Length: 514
Image (cartoon, rainbow, N blue to C red):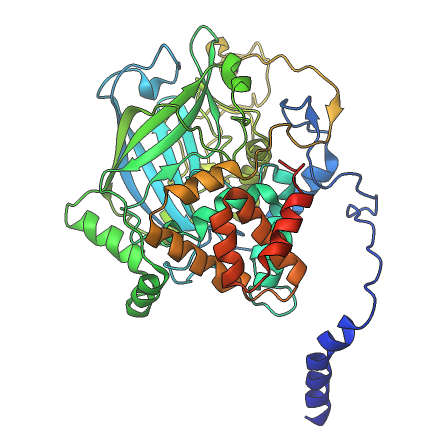
């Protein structure tokens, strides 16, 4: 007992003792094999805007290791609730895409939608501040399409190589098992592109009043491809037909005190009562030749597309509660790489990493044959040469499990389903995009808020940022918000008790970082 108490006392005194000693020199970052890492900030791409290369072994190892950190709960999006419904197309979009679910007015496609919180574990209160996952599985005649997004239109980072680092900072400390703002803002002080998303998360939009009263976004740019092979870049935005309603931090806490599963209760009770929630799907489109006409990179997932009109293309309605929570909500598995002909991934570096990571984590978490489960199984026939593996309950009746073959029953290609062509030129690089524009849209968002919303935003941010012990980190983070909007930064500086002059000096020193 005495030894334990003494140890506790020594630990309590340790921070003061460490503060008086010089910091040890940093250690070289290595891969698991011990190989030094040359660049941990940017994925290897074919040219600045080209696709991410599979030979980036560090990226693949980092994502694959990250995907396997938890069992059996999801590493992220663990707390979720789902419902069945249908999507109805408003018209024929064949000029833009050969995807058949958009081929005719009134065409209906079954869907399953899973809402979730991103960071907090399963069983956690649903009103905690967090982005909300908004993942829609379309069961189309050409296979499934997973539109995997959030309730906020942008993301924290623009390169998947930083995703494990970001989640590690947001999750509980591996030492104390407590979430710690010191770790969170230490990380984000180095990630200026996070300013936009942090502004949204710490606003009242970070605590939606109900799942029915929030929008959803695909976040990334995707591609629509028509039967001529013509490409149009697209953003998918879900607009709630129930309107938008958010809680203040105080209202969220009061709601949690009454029922920490209030979002699930609200959604299920509404559906059971026949009050079916719906969302209109709207698209923003941009031609490839117009991508470089903007002062930001439209393929950057930390950006919205201001001034680009939204066109309604269909409506989704949720009308049925799953018969079994585990079999549907928990076993549902999504990946942005699950696409149908006519819808493709863009060169967005964050999306490119997710194409690997999401399906890989489902194969680990649910099993190799997770797509055979009823909630994930496509309604169209499956004729692949994949075989065996844990949890395989398919029925194999042919010994032709290879291609090509002269044997009747073999598989053949479908030329019409071939992906669009992309000319990739330039050197292989690991570097950030040229048009970062890290702060402008965050400032635009701040100025779009009402006075009350700005007050809540600053208060919510200060509640966590004010707990950071390192003054340099606080000043650095505040400087990001000051560069977004001087009033924003000044109010936050006062709220967390840092000198505005120090903030201005850091902002001026970093002015070359756009």
